[in-house]
Amino acid sequence: MRNVEKISNVVNARLCSGVVAQVLYLCRKPRTTQRKFVNALLGCFIGETNYEDDYANKFLKCTKNIPTDVSGNANVEQSRIYVQRFKKVKELLDENKVENIINVICTLIYNDSDIRGTTVINEIEGIRKSDVLDITHFNFSEFIVGVFLYTIQNTINVQGKDCVSFIDKHYIEQFSDIKSRFSWGWTLLSGERGAIIAYTKKSEAIIGLLNVLEQDSSVEFFCVFGGVSNKLIEYKSCELFSRWLSKNNDAQLFLCYEVGQAAEGRARLLNPRKICRDNLPTDPYERMLMKAQNVEKAIVSFPENVKDRVGLIPIDVQLNHHITLLDDEVYWNLLTEHRSSENTTYKAENTPTGIKTKCEQLEYMLRILSEKKDDVSVALIEMLKKKVDAICALAKH
Image (cartoon, rainbow, N blue to C red; front, side, top):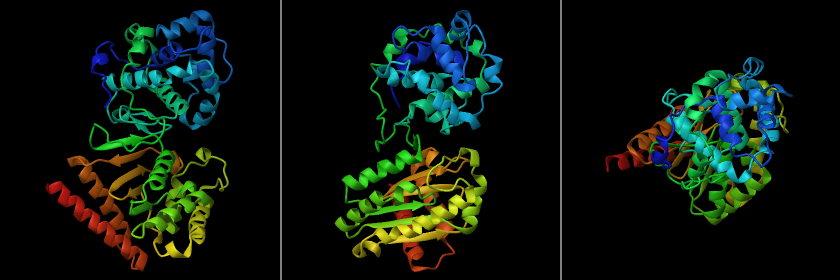
């Protein structure tokens, strides 16, 4: 956890739209007026706006509530549009202050006693209050828009009046002295909170895990259980898997992908409006079928000398979350109406709660696989049982 003790008492933390806006405004480029900035920020949610100087000033000071045309229309279903419009706001910000902005907002969220730890303060990325100080990578636009959307829907702007009075350039600068835990990329550093580390997106986790395989051929086990992303089965990734397997004769790769009832269940959960246009169908069920076919085709690109260590396992039991294993590390992400690659990924650590969580995740996989009798599934089941036994032995020590 970042060192926020020396700052936590500086401000009576109360998150609201004006507080978030003021933090951003204090990190603006020179000659950016309050009016220009507030119109750009609120314009993310309703398009073009033309609020006057007086309103912009009072909004930033939290003496005026957010306009009803904004609060009445803002909703998470339109988040992609809001994020696109946020480009206008980014153009007004000092890019050297990006880490200050996120450090400040995360600290305010963490110290706001009115927000419970389990509260999702960013629906776009599924980020909870309890996770904000341990996240090591942020998509800046989506994080800010998601938090701002939370404040629009769940707070009253004037409640941040006392809080915003403490937030000035000096307050912002204090966060420059804090050793940042943001890498702006994937990191496998252990978190200080113990049980889990939250990462922004599964897509970022996959990129990071592929980087580990690229740099460390001693890894012996990589398993994706549900939610096989396009990134994992594209040509470059398959080449990487092949090099890794060729360098390490003990290494094994398992791709467990959803078919049948599992694919249907996942398709029903997906919101068609939240599916990006890519090379896959936008219809949820057709999309799931195409992904399964692509996984099955991927093994063709593996050289003959490693194919026997690549296991493909179709899963026909509906899943409630996806799991990724890298040797003894366990990662998982809960399923939402977003594409799996957009969900938050969690990592279990070797603490009492983390060890328990690891066992729970592996035992969940074993339950799903329990009815399978084919050789590949049996091999994976045996490996998972050994991992559970090893974790249990670790817990006793």
